Image (cartoon, rainbow over the protein chains, first blue to last red):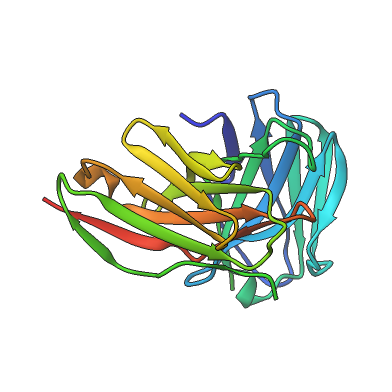
Length: 116
Length: 110
């Protein structure tokens, strides 16, 4: 059983919908991450929050909006998505703050998103 | 374009043999190196990480790092069918970005 949980596990949404993905880590970690995993592509880092501050934003379109209300919770708000945004969205956490330590990451089970 | 390269496979290895997986990276200033495995339909799980040149052993797994040649490898001794998965290499670069390779599909033959 992973210490990182994600809800929902599956999500189907239309292009005009607004939805949110939730991640919670029970490990006392200091950094949290959002990744996108598409078929036949490597994992793509989207956002990093370290000590509740956003420290990395890898040129992600504004239709993806992250939120980190505290060190245990991370959200990804979705708005006006495109069909090519369909993918597995993975949340991860690491004990060390970003930029220190080795940042080995523990992944949640992911949310399988389908945009119609 | 900074990259992490892996052979996509599949790499087929008989049960009980040694599986050898390789990964090369382009950023010479990279700091830390990770091996994850990902079973079909599951999320990645950390196998081990290494940040110093040489070998690091953990049970049946050995990570090998050669910064001069910019490669990191993973050896799995006494391979088991349960080791069949996609093995992902990840590199933490000098600017702290973590880049993943596409992964190598490993298939252990019973």
